[in-house]
Image (cartoon, rainbow over all chains, first blue to last red; front, side, top):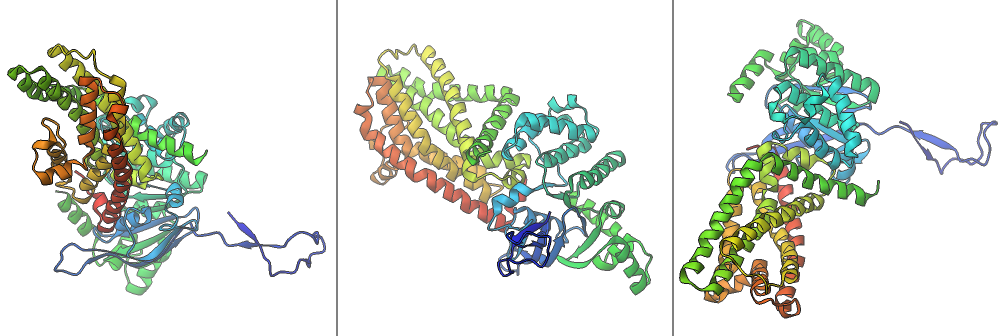
Length: 298
Length: 266
């Protein structure tokens, strides 16, 4: 998307002989970033006697339209807090966030219309059917429920869920199916910025592949910009054009997967793999992280 | 699409969703109705046992309309509790919907649900006690219920703040607030029996005026002009409590976003 603006400082007389002299001269402006995060910090006060915990610490990220940006980090590194900050579900302590040029604080409604989110837990009214849950979401975003239902059937069909499942309660669906419905709910609103917070965690390999292929298709056909947090390094490598690594709330590395791997090989003598990158920039192994996550869940 | 259409559609989303939920929990709804009938009968039978027909009518009307007011109040108050329980609160809060639209939708459904619930209860009690409502001024009672609902919606919005602020105890605190309203509003006794300081509080409870007006309309057949002294305090409390409820809810949302309480589930 390019925006052109009238430049009042330019002479109305054009140097271009072909251009009609009475037309104003326009100069293209650079498109606003799909997501601009500038020096964002979020602290939580967990105990009055202790200093606040810094969950996100002075993080700056810029995403261009159509980009898939992977955010990796250990459990508790601040990935989900970052997603919640961009979603407007947490207030910023410092810094600012813009989505396609709209300030998150000053133009909250405009930003909300542009974004949607899928989190690791597929939250629904479990007694209601996918059709009822999606109709609710569609109405909230001002969509026509009948048109939304058609679109939902198409998206869910693409994810391998038949139309007849649309009328049964969500609680009767498997975890993987529920997650696919959650993805359909987010896509129904045609978000230009999609925040995917570990969308494939807990899915079986086939469901995981379905979702990953769909994300690729979404980028190719809808020009959507996506922020993806994941613990699956192969998934990050497959889907993400750039990867950022969070450790202790700080962004410790950011580049394309190829360059990150090359850097750890050249600078630290490690294997050129994303696992080496993860270990180097988070200070821990992926296995430690997964084990800790499982222990927390138990 | 105009902004008004968008907001009407968003508001209707809450009505439709809550209706679907009621449908899915229909067995529990029936059980809740049995509970309401049993409670109202227990209280009304006190009047029957004394053999005072007027006292019986006072208690029946008190029990029936307290049921209406508490159903409306609680349904709005449960707006947050329910979403927290299902884990959908963050998704609803992320949607491009003003809080006033969200709360209005929840309140609209609460009023419709409360009216149906109360009508069934009234029919059951009327049949049980063979009540004569021939003299009752039903339109006047309906007007006062409608106006009274507005104030109750405002207080319901304030009650919905509690589950936002405290995940563990918020919903229980809604019951505390509700029982205080029951105590001071003259549901089963005249407010004149209350201590002076409680009578002062009863004057700011919209339930006091609704109950007084509805009783007089149903038992004595009083008309709206006869009941005007009860109408203007209701209008004032409606004008005061709805903006106060919206403002309070907005403040609670800011607090929850600052402290990360929106993400808590259960």
